[in-house]
Length: 363
Image (cartoon, rainbow, N blue to C red):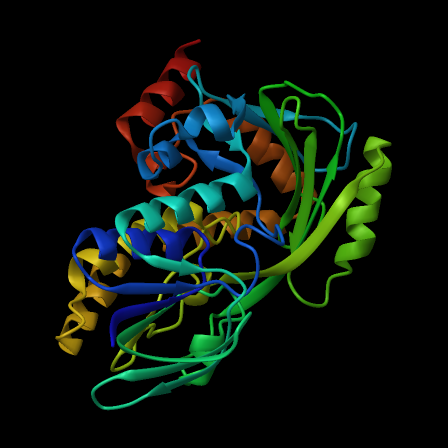
């Protein structure tokens, strides 16, 4: 019997598997396909990402440095409202490479990481969890003291155990061009209803274009308008669900969810790499597979860490739906140098940001 079976080896699953294995637990991690594929997540991340990686990761994964963002109320060519820092604000990385790197760290820590294993059944018993998967060698049946559902927005673990769903799912689309672009600003377009579209330069790796919106919005139509506006050909298109709004409960008696499965994401961007790996660390610190009551400590820990950020993130998102004249007025008044951390909306009231605002007013 394993201490933990981890379902899904994206960033949260790999991070938890690594930390649990380092703590001496017997860990099996199952990924339904090839780790990192298919790509369904942006590679634009805060510089904090390097705190979660191993030696030499930056040299292998880094693509570009970003200092700020140009916000547009309209499409390409419309007026831009720049927000920027005097230091590097974020990085663009090889997103597929990140997943593979984190999985390798889990293996090095002692976790048994297996690709091409699709979990088809999860049954929770009083004293164990039974997991059934389909792999290259046929049917695999294993038992564990606990199971970690790190299997994305449409989590099989969540559904099998009847855990509640996230508040909503956005529909996201990504595509890439082969332009060589070393600009240090991303472009954000507030054109899709209630969310936004983006353009992210990736240096020699090309440019990432994306768009997300709630159900009912013609995402493909809006995305085509974005691409047409930039007059560019794109390839490697992919799409997926983006969960927003964590449910009231992400644990059961012997199971817990991390990452997109738990909607541990930023409501104002849909990103969740840092939130999910931070939550994985909370899980590894708090959960003892021999003491199911410790799952409550995990619920408290990750919510205490992220609840304020997510609440404020919902308020920021509301600005995407304001009338266009109000958006222009607000962007015009607030644009300029900032001191905000891209993953922490509470940094809007940080000394660094307030200093930047005061400096701008004095100027």
